[in-house]
Length: 150
Image (cartoon, rainbow, N blue to C red; front, side, top):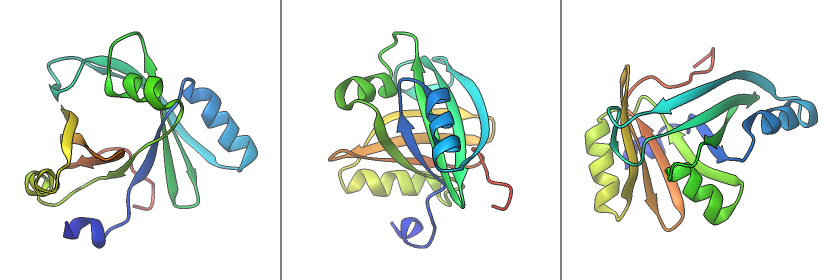
């Protein structure tokens, strides 16, 4: 997967029971800059694979490192709720945005044994999580949260 070798990840995602609290911990303890907080509804018409649900997202940055804290909202059996239940709070995924050749990148990872756990559409394109042996990689075809100097 050459796209993984020649680019840095966009962000590291964490699944947590309280995204606002984690954002506060980072801003107070590590002097991170809290960028934004928002809620995302993932209805069945935007999901190609996965369980519809709702999540709260808090983004914070430390230097050039972007953290995404994801809090499952509600009782739906989403990929984030399952991860939080199975492993507790912690790192969930490494994300790559603006992936050139998105479809071929997804197929390439699938050929090495990765499986899609959730996939969907957003205004600018498509995204998915691919999992293998506890490693989760998020790929986005375009868009997504961006740092001011990206």
